[in-house]
Structures are given as structure tokens and as C-alpha cells.
Length: 190
Image 1 (cartoon, helix red, strand yellow):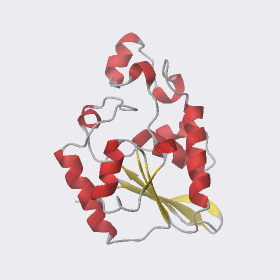
Image 2 (cartoon, rainbow, N blue to C red):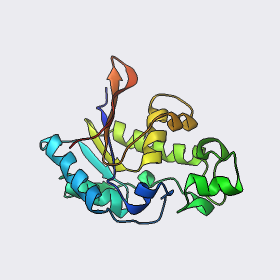
Image 3 (cartoon, rainbow, N blue to C red):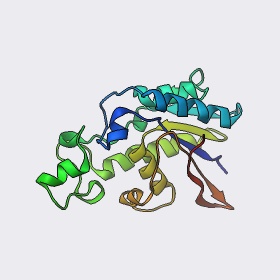
Image 4 (cartoon, helix red, strand yellow):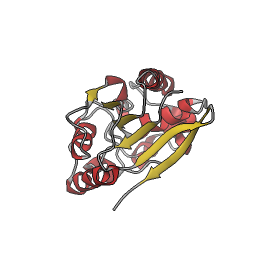
């Protein structure tokens, strides 16, 4: 049986703090984001992984480095955040001024990715991780990790909308016997 998937959402950025949709814009961590990323590493106590993958975006790469895994991480383009197209950099309340009933998970985004396209990338990451021969660490972003969790569980990709995920959090996907389950979710450290 393959190992567990350890999901790390990147530390806080200006846009995650404001609630703006930050997909492909390459934002740096803010000070509190860097501090919490380093705290993740202290709680991992030099845990070894069969494979460490990171989104190519700097907020995920920096979280990975500060957590202590930058020297072993491999860049995985499929871990990039959802491409929000026209809604990049905008908050949900701003979008709802134009489209009152808008919901990312059901309405989608103009000129961006569909939830199914993001799910296809998540499935590719799961396939790569499943062949690693042990536990795998994934440093990425809120929505891609939520969709990845839904895919892991065999749920529709939009079910990722049911899983809240804080910045600088740890979640673990694993098994109960042979059934894929969530073993930890959205844990943060101080």
C-alpha cells in the first residue's frame, strides 16, 4: 500500500490575508507567513519523506524551504493553484457585486481553469505520489489541495469546497485498512 500524503498549504501572503483569489500571481510570503512556515518545520522534527514536491510558485517553495525541505524538494507544476482567470486578485465580495450568486466551486471563472481541469492535475499528483514508495510531502495552495483531498476520497472535485484549509497548515491523507481517508485536517501550530 502506498504511503500517506502530507499536505502543506503555504504561509500567509498579502492576498491570502485579504481574501483575494491568488492563483498564478507569484506572491511572496509576508512576515507572519514566514514565521508560521518555520514553525511547521519545527513540529515535523526532521521527518523524512520518500518524495517532497512543491508548487513552482514562490509562496509554496519558500514555505517548503522554511519548513526544512527546500534542499530535497522537486518542483511539480501540477501543484500550481487554480488559474482564476478574470477573477485573479479579486475577493469573493468584489466578484459578487457583478455576479451576486457567484460561487467558485459551482460557477467557475471566466478565462481560467474549470474545477475538472484542476482535478486532472490533482489526480496526476496523486498518481506520482502513489509510486514514491512511502510518505510524500506536498507544498502547495488552498484550492488545489482541497480538490486533491476530494479526489483522494473519490468525491467530485467540487466537494473540495467543503474542506476549509488555513495558511501554514498540515493535513494528512492516508488509509484505514485499504480505504482512502483523511487522517488529519487543517492543523496549525504555534
